Amino acid sequence: MPDHTNSTFIVHVPTRLLFGAGQLENLHRETMPGRKAMIVISNGKSTRANGYLDRLTGQLEKTGVEYAVFDRVEPNPLKSTVNAGGRFAREHGCDFIIALGGGSCMDAAKSMALMAVNSGDYWDYIPSGTRKGRPVANRPLPLVAITTTAGTGSEADAGTVVTNEEAHEKTGFVHPDLFPALSIVDPGLMLTVPPLFTAFQGFDALFHSVEGYVSNGTNLMSDMYALTAMEHISRYLPRAVADGSDLEARTHVAFGNTLSGYVMCVGRCTSEHSLEHALSAYHQVLPHGAGLIMISKAYFTHLIERHVADERFVRMAQAMGMPDAAAPMDFFTMLDRLQTACGVSGLCMSDYGITPEEFGKMAANARETMGFLFQCDRVELSLEDCVSIYRESYR
Ligand SMILES: [Zn+2]
Image 1 (tube, rainbow, N blue to C red):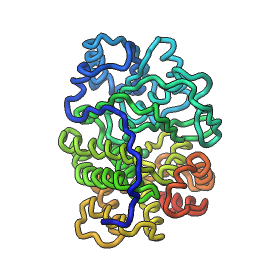
Image 2 (cartoon, rainbow, N blue to C red):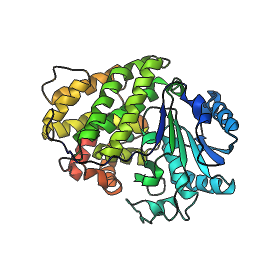
Image 3 (cartoon, rainbow, N blue to C red):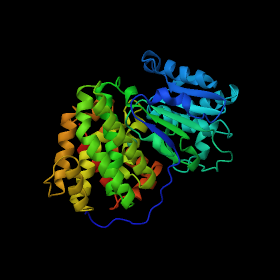
């Protein structure tokens, strides 16, 4: 057993979740939470080209539910898109929302569910950064989340991450009414994700569990979810990257991702996520998972060198496939091996336009906009620590 962990925790994950290949075809058997859906998809071509949208609308037609399609969600969704989505729902008389896509779609849809029935600007409700923290007066519209990726765990939690493009703030918002009423995790919808994005998303899922396992909010329940998630993701992600059509590998990675979503409900992430959000807040082209991969080795080495959780790093190395792991740095070895196996060990910040001159500004942004995750660290990270983690990660 690793070191002591909390035996006090709260489990509140009120989402009905259908898991497994082919589950999308069972949607029509479910009770829909409204009569007219706003279907939220990305601004790319894949949701239509892969036939996913037709399959969804076919299911809805069987249930007699009407729908309108909002197809303007960009990667790293913007506040302006969320505000536009809220207006769209009102104008079309939609009384619930269906997200069909990856983390960006699900998160944007959650925020739109809020804006569909609440006035003003989305950022009025954000409780961090240049926030106003206005109370949510009206209960957000119910949400059905159909995930086509294995990355953010958004189908299992009540959080949403949106970027305020004017203020360069990318931050999370959690509200108990943002749990999806129904989620479908159908690995059959993930077979078309390209290798690089499979890796980015898989590492995002992995880090939700890794962070959860070394945060100061660990508990018996989140530990169980996190270790199992790490086992499944570490073992199967390289296969899913190498052969996207490997349904068995996709299924296990999707399972790990959903468990990592539960980790975020029962436990908490750490400042690695704050540091990444600052990178993509200034460079919208940077995928969230890629940013996490870039800073992960320096970030976790920083924690290991400060001995924040020696036994926990050993236990994670074991879960990731080194049964005889004995030293905290064995975790680093396994992380490096997994990144190499997935073809993402050489990612360069410079390829995304990031320059070292920005690190002071980004470190301050991370601490201001996403300061709440710094409070979940087992050791305090100073501004200088953040800058040096960025510097060591720079290529
Ligand atoms: Zn994440």
